[in-house]
Structure formats: structure tokens, C-alpha cells
Amino acid sequence: MTRESMPSAVLAIVVAGAIPAALAYLALREEPESAVSGPIEPAFLLDLGDLHLKHGHLEGARLAYARVRESASEPALRGRAEYGLALVDLARKDLAAAVPHLEKAIELVPDEGRANLRVDLAEVLFALGRVAESEAVVDLVLSSPARPEVHRRLAALYRDRARGLASRVEARLAAAPDDRGQLAFLGDIYAEMLGEAPKAISVYERLLALEPGNLVLLDRLVALSLQLQDFARARTHGEVLAARLERDPRARLGVLRLLAELALAAKDPDRAIALLTESESIAASEEKDDLRVRALEIRKASGTLAEEIARLETEGELDCLWLVYTRVEPDKAKALEVARKILEKDPDGPRALAAVVSAASAAGEDEEVARAGARLLEIAPEASKAAILPYAAAMRKLARLEEAARALRAAAEKVPGLAPACHIAIAGLAGPEERAASLARAVEAARASGDAGICLETAAVLRAAGAADQALAVVEAGFGLGPTGETSSGLAWERILALEALGRAAEAEAACRALARDLETGSEARRAAERKVLELMQKQGKPIKIETDG
Image (tube, rainbow, N blue to C red):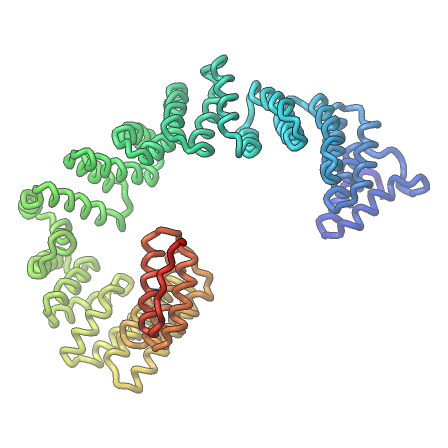
């Protein structure tokens, strides 16, 4: 084997997972009679020491590092070896022995590597009770530029002595008030370690004066100001932040929405509405309605909604009028009137057809629901999810069961994601035998979707349709897909409700307790789960004990 091939050979062995073989190979080169013996590069010896150390072979590691220290000509390599020897001593819990190795390593390594080594030394000295020496080393760290990771390590070292660390950084700033790294570090100490938001704000604002476009600083200042309920300051920094986020529409949208609420808190509804209107211009289409509704709600609270409705009617802004009569000031008759006008302007528009189905269903206009629903299922089934059950209900009242079933089956074939809802709707149109078959198809379609969200939606509809057994089966299928966040919580709730509907209150209670444990303490979701536990206990006739301290 040639000398040049040795590094790749060692690497191949290590990558293959044969660490002992790699150690044996490297050790072989140290044997005088070995066929591959000869001068060994320090880098190989450092590799050997690192492998020994990783696998707990401390004497082997010590010998390898010591040989580098004695033979290497480059100071950086000797410094790396001294650090390795310190790690061996630390692994042996001989902290005092590690100190001189760390000190020597600091002398030998390049400048950029010294800060982390000094933090190592400060930690060891502190652990030895040599606090004054430890703090002297910390002062050396603070006296030179350091990366954020070094500051994080210092924060960990001073976790229980944050006040002292703040004092040391403030002393440094007294001599160099424009040191941006120290200002950022001091702000973090006050914000994260001491929880003193006013002082953190003061420090961050000093830094912001030096870095006016720092988005991270602006964001922190907004958050801290909100924490203190200093809405005026939050608004001031938020407006600067929004202006700086022109190239990041998603982030800018979040800031604009916050600014709208802050303007409302400052009793400036016109400004709040203007900010929501600006937000609408950069929002995704599915978010625009929520922004419009919020603006309309503000108008309602400020007494200007009637004036706005008159303007919308004059200018023919039907989409906004639809939101007024369905979400802000619900009015079934007016909502249907607006939906008809929207459909008149766009006879085959999916949004228009869906609006008519919704409004006509609420108003009891079954023929209209049937016409619009059938057309929507035919030309845009992917947009028909919310229309499926109202359409099926209207067709059932009109005794047009076969026609409805055909339309729903066709939609399920075109859009597999709709299949669970379509089969559930068909079950509502059928007799007992066909109902069971349709519900089984709904369960199978939900499982086949591979989408936990579809499983959640399907379970809710199945349970509402009185098919709790099938709902529970779909819930378990959904959990098998590894759901997270709200989908996981939603499935957990559906499991509880399905078990309750099946009369399995004890199992429902256990599931509810498990859900409550996973939810954030004090959150509304956790309180709802705890209330449900009490309700399920009452159903079982269990005594409810209220425990108090003492």
C-alpha cells in the first residue's frame, strides 16, 4: 500500500463503521517492524488520538497526542495536540492536569481558535473553584472580538451568575461604548438570562443606532415592547421593520398585521384599516378574505360599516359584500342575493357556484342548491369540498337520489382527495346495505389518500353522520401517517369524541388525559381537554375530587 493511498484507506474503514479496524491499522504504522512503518505525519497521529478518545481508549489517545506535541514543527499542530491532551485529562476527571495543556494550546493556536479554548479554560478553572482566575480569562475573551457561539458558551458558564456577567460586559462597554458585539451580548444577557426587558430594550436600541437596518434587532425590539405592553414603541420599531422587509412579503405581511392591531389599540381605526388593505395587496389569495373580514370588523366596531356597505354596493364590490353578509353581519337573504349576482357575472366560476350552494342551502332553496352543486361537481370538483354535503342534503329532499349518487361518484373518480367526503354523502342517500358499503369506501379512500389531514376531515364527517366506528378506524389510520401539530391534536380529539359516541367513556377519558398532558400548560386547548375529562368522569359516575395544597 502506498503512502498516498493511506488516508483514503483509513477513511474507507471508518466510513464503513469498522472503527476498531481503523485503530488497528493506524497503530500498526507505529510498530518498528511493520511493512508500513516510517515517519508518521502529525495529522495521522491526531486522527489516531481522536479515534482512541472517541472510543474511550484514553492511554492510546494520550500517547498519540504526546507524540505530535514532541515531533510536529507547526505551532498549530502542537496546539491541537495540547488540546487533545487536555481532553484526555478531562475524560479522566483530572481537571487540574488539563489546565496547563489548555494554557499551552491557547499560546500555540492561531488567533481565531483562542476564544473557544479560553472559554474551555474558564470553565475548568471555575469548576476547580479558581473563580478569580476564571473571570480573568473571561475578561480576555471579552476584550477581543468573538463569534456568537463563544458568547453562548459564556452565557452557559454564567447561567447562575448572569448579573456578574452583565457587570463585566458593561465594564467593557464603558471603555468601548460602540462595541457592537458586546452590545448584542449584553442585550441578550438582559433579555434571555435576566428577563429584564426594559434594560434589554435600552441596550438593543443603542445597538440599533449603530446598525439601523438590523432586522433581527428590530424584531427583538418589537417582541420585547409587546411583552411590556409598550405598544407605541412596538409600533415605532414595527414600522421600520415593515419598511425594511420589502423583499420578504411573507415576513412583511406578519408585521403589517401586527401594526394594524397596534393601531387599533392606539384608537386609530383608519390607520388599522389602511394597514390591513396594504396587507391584502401582498397576501396569498387564501388569506385575503381574512384580512378583508378583519377590516370590516373594525369598521363595524367604529360605527362606519353602514357607510362602507353603501360604498361597496355603489361600486359593485360583490366579493366584499359576500363577506359582510356571511361573516360580519350574517343575513341569509342578502347573502343569497349577493351570491346570485356573483354567479350572474361569472356563470361557471367555481367560487360563484360554491357561494350559491352555501347561501341557497342556508336559505332552504333546495332547487338552487341542486343546480349550482351539480354544475360545480361537473366542471370544478376540486373546488367542491364544502358543497358536497349541502348538495347531497338538497338532493335527498328533492328525492333525486340516483342523480346525486352518480354526480358524487364521478367527482370522487376525478379527484381522489374528495372520495371520502363523496362516499359519506352517498351513504346519506342510500339504504342500510348501500350505506354500509359507501361508508366502507369512505374509510378506504381516506386510508389510501396517505394524508393525515384528509383522515381528520373524514373522521369528523363520519362521526357527525353517526358512523363512529368508521370514524375511529380513520383516526387510527391518520395517526399511522405520523401527523404533527394541529392535525395530530385534531385526530386526538376525534378519537376522544368517537370513543364517547361508542359509549366507551373510560377509554375516551384515558385518551383525553393523554391529550391534555401533551398540550401546553395554561393554554385554552389544555383547559378544554381538562374540561372534557371532567365531563367524561361525570358520565361514568366517578367522584370528582378537587385537591388543594395543605
